[in-house]
Length: 102
Image (cartoon, rainbow, N blue to C red):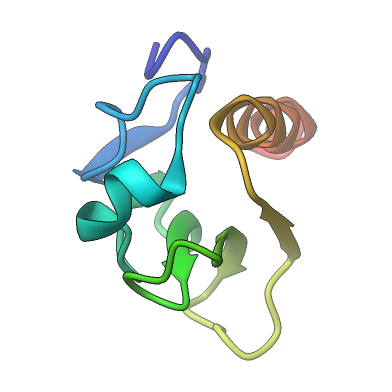
């Protein structure tokens, strides 16, 4: 479990996000909102990456990318959300969709 999300066989290799509350307010947390917030590795070639774009901008958004073979130009999946509840929901959805593949 990570952040109350079942991430299956995923391994959290970088976490600068799990302290954010579900009642997240970008203006209050803007100093922490950067490009690199979370990486979960599911296999040698599959990574879920979460960042904030643009960095340190309270009007930005979370960017989730599921990347295979370090091909950042063509992610397997890409999503943008602005709140923590939607972010958690999206992470859970991605992990569940991976279950048959990993």
